[in-house]
Image (cartoon, rainbow, N blue to C red):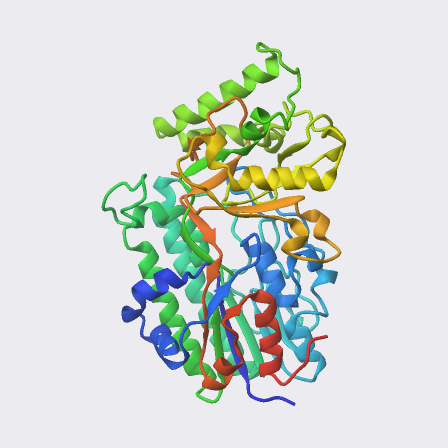
Amino acid sequence: MLKRKLLIIGIDGMDPVLLARFQDRLPNLKALVQATGQVHYESVFPPDSVPAWMSFFTGKNPAEHGILEYNDYVASQKHAEVPLDRVQGSSFWDLAGGAGLRVAVLNPFLAYPPWPVTGFMASGPAFVTGEVQGFPEEYRRRHQLPFMGGYADFPGEQELAGFLDQAERDTRELAAYANQVWEDIQPDLAFVSFLTLDRIKHFIWRYCDPQDPTYPGPTAFSDAVFKFYLLLDEIVGSLRAKAGKDVNVLVMSDHGHGRRCTSLINVNEILRRQNLLVCQGGAQVFSSRRLFEKAKNLVLVYAHRWHLERLLQKVAKRIPNKKALKRGDHIIDKEKSAAYLSDFDGANPFGGICLNASAYGAGDYESLRTKIIELLVNLHQPAGIKYAVVKWAKRREEVYAGPYLSKYPDVVFELEAEYGVNWSLFAEAVVPNPRHRTLSGGHLKPGVLLVSSSEMSRDLDRLENPMTLHRHVLSWMGLRDA
């Protein structure tokens, strides 16, 4: 039985620290904070938009739904097609529709193409080509659909002004369309997500953060992030006004977003020094593979030093199999290596190590995992760092359980936020992040969760995540999970 209509506003990358910093100038978001307070809310591991939104939609952890792939902006890797059968039918809007409730779903990340719902659903492609689509088609034809879906562009410094202007237009047009849909359909449950805040933070962060080592000084972009918070605050107020006072409201993000790691730890090099990783060519000092790896490292160092990252990015796009080059596949002998760094979340603080127990002495898998965890916990020692840089390291089954657990590396870990993982060999253990100037914003685990009523707030626990939030949405609608 429907308790009360619900409007969910998803804001990709909205960060609780920035929200607290800006909230005195954000009247609509501040009103939600003052009404019920902020709940401690953490994203999934790793805190990437792909697994996080899927976990919120379905109520399943990433090892249960298995949709973990990420988009590597630096390497221009395109996202693979999403297995929608793992989402369709188990999403909160499908469950609401199955109970006879009318739904409106706009811009659900990766849920594309849209499928039949009891109401209206519209979405766009993420990281791949395609057009925005809506179901049912007869409603879709009533009004022109705004831009929806993910972004694949990689703006340079000369393109940032146009990039920000387009992001603002896209955001305003989607908000106007959401208001129109609410008026036309009068749904019991509405969901709309805005992806542009996260997108601009990735590229604009260093211009807004005086503490960033690549901060260029005051520019026209210095308050760009704050302006987007202002815009989204305005939109939250507009959507709440259109929905009316009798509608419950949830404002949430999939993860937080702040300064991206400024240093990288060459985990593979540390494994090599511990005789856990073996290179092609063995101990040959002048092997072509080793020389190529060293040359690659020098190019990255000098590109960063002389501000040539953008040029290097353009050149890298023309290199065949550049992902394998980045992760060291050209030089690592994985059959003979007992351990090597996974690439499941890119150059971020959230990493994992794949194990090959058959190459480890007696082949004891669990003793190898114990050795790796101990090495990670004490990573500051072999890396020459004065303090611990690993927040935690665990066996993957200590983090999640599910049929797709094997998509996670055997050992997973989280570094302190200023460090990210890297794959280079025959290099220093810790190096500056050569990509930070082009991609200076990064994901953080704490996200935003705000609700409009004390009734909703009473249901929340001290620590929430996308899976529990899915269940709360169903409860607030008077439904049970499938």
